[in-house]
Length: 236
Image 1 (cartoon, rainbow, N blue to C red):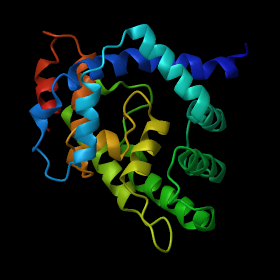
Image 2: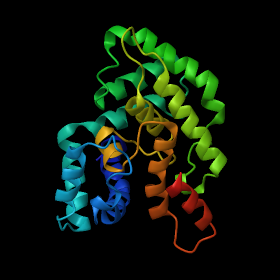
Image 3: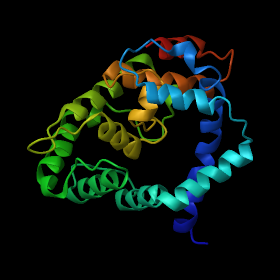
């Protein structure tokens, strides 16, 4: 198997223990957080209540993630985008913006229509000029970021989400989050509406930052010097 072919499997394996840890905690009793956000849909909480009753081993979860990636094509789209952006993403380059938009459409952001390619590309370009310098260096993991760095990424997310991406659409929160994940996968967890609603987060900068609390709390060791940072993340 070539490195390119094995990358989706390696990616699925890397995220499996993150997913397992978050699922093990977040799904224990989803009603504990019901009501913290009145916009949370009943469907999201019904799904959470159902999955909270499922017993699954780490192996079963890993295998399920692999099958999901193999059948949906999401891992293939991610691998293709990362190859196109190698060795380092630079959205000031037109070909990198094209690859990013292709990735976003493959990952469900269909509002970024081919007919609106130019305004969508222009949005990425102007956002990069305004905010790229504020982002952490590539490779930083979410639990290592300071409060100031977290706030800067959240502001960058909100600015991209608000950009016009066509005559009738803005870039939007899901596309903004997935763009940041593509650019900085260790720093910025991807999300979609179902994930956001389940975690009782709105689509504001504060809501985006709050999702990191669940990831950072599981990554950061208990009793470490970063305990105060974890508290800040969860309460953000």
